[in-house]
Image 1: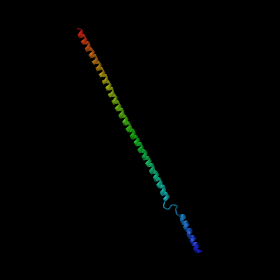
Image 2 (image 1 turned 180 degrees about the vertical axis):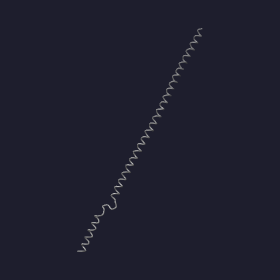
Image 3 (image 1 turned 45 degrees about the vertical axis):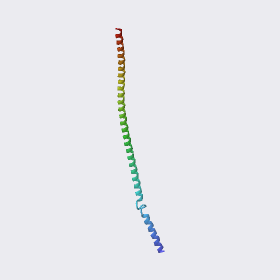
Image 4 (image 1 turned 90 degrees about the horizontal axis):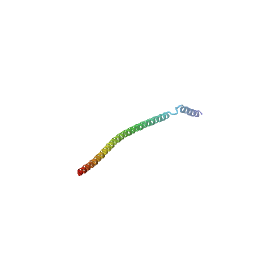
Length: 117
């Protein structure tokens, strides 16, 4: 019985030793928690950088669009000025044409008067 008692007492001592050991002697649970926290921080940082990049791209696009709109507005003004000048030239040519008609009519009258004299 003494052998049996020593086996049981050894087993009991081993049981107490196992119970006395920490549940996670290698710290795997803590490592897992730290790793998950790190992954979360990395994900948050990536999301933050992604949002910053998106905002920057949107601002750049808006700036480019504004610049293009301003250039288009300037070009429209320039073309309107050219059209206005062309219309003025057209009026001048019409006036010249009318003056030419007046001159022809005047010349005809003079010739008619000369014939009468």
